[in-house]
Length: 209
Length: 209
DNA sequence: CGCTTGGTTGATCGAACTCAAGTCCGGTGG
DNA sequence: CCACCGGACTTGAGTTCGATCAACCAAGCG
Image (cartoon, rainbow over all chains, first blue to last red):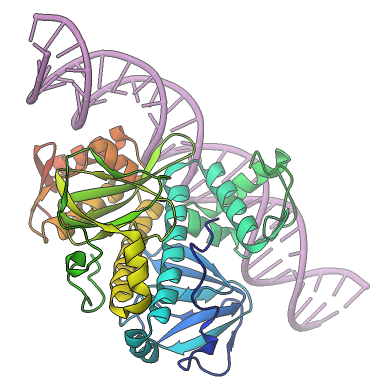
């Protein structure tokens, strides 16, 4: 949706001495970190899809982000993770010691710029999500999510692999499972999308979506 | 709600050569900048309250932030402002040339850290807003907004000056004017808050709010 | 005084939630 | 091979809640 504002000062954190040597594999459904746990590392997604969520007081959960390869996780800078991160599918992440990052950042402006760029991008995405959740009808929200997923994960191709279950989509959009399902069904019967499988959508009429 | 993560590397941008000498006064209801306009400066709020919003495609608007003294505006780093900023009341802001900021940032890690801190804080706030808007009932959303305003503008004191009109509260929460008004009335008749004036709330029962 | 603006309140309607059956599908074990 | 099972998804029926439309009120102002 929104592209990186300017040229990235760094392609990857892998070049930095703070990075651990070997990337970490994480299976679908596994946590990368938990909200409230001590934050001793940040992560860079090498491959896969990670969802970020917070637990609400009433027991529900609110997804606050969907992050893809190249994105950074846990850049909040607090001593404790302020969100949980869970792999939507099998993914691999690079673990980077937070202490080393902070030490390096004092002296190297490029690293701070890299983090700033990641934070700006995340802020833009979160605002975009806020626009989606705040304003429109259930149908519009689901449609906006599908468009966003298409643009981000499939580069605009018609076939969109849905990394989120209906329940997760609901948690992202502030809707119930049933409402998401109904919205998908309506989009299908309107010939705007096709659903060969429940986790694969084909966008037939991008304009109306 | 969420405090600044660590010690701020800089108290204010005023000390920086990129800052204009005189702060700018802006009257209530006046724009600081417009979404889509060329972004040649960022701003630091010296005093007052600024609301950030984006225009939705359907004509509505979505508030994406309420910013107070000390906060920075327009740190997205894009060539064009990605939001509009409007003074909720008479405020004064410091204008800082974007070109100078970016040039300085290349060499001085402390400036980048200052921006990163602002971006992190803004991200945390936006996520908080997402939690409020995404999940709960109209009553709960209004209550959460009141609590947030109390914590941020009144430091937890019972008397909260409401800088937002009912319509703006609705735009912030994804509700209509009438629903916000009804929620306030219900909170009032439940003796949870008092409303001496429509722009002043007294929190009587913080726990239930 | 009439007009405007922002807020409140009422009545109605539709959309989304809730509760409750179904269906589909992959996996497991007899 | 097939019957069974569990989980995710879908669909249906009834209810609730918020949006809509509309009237009304209070304050500010020419």
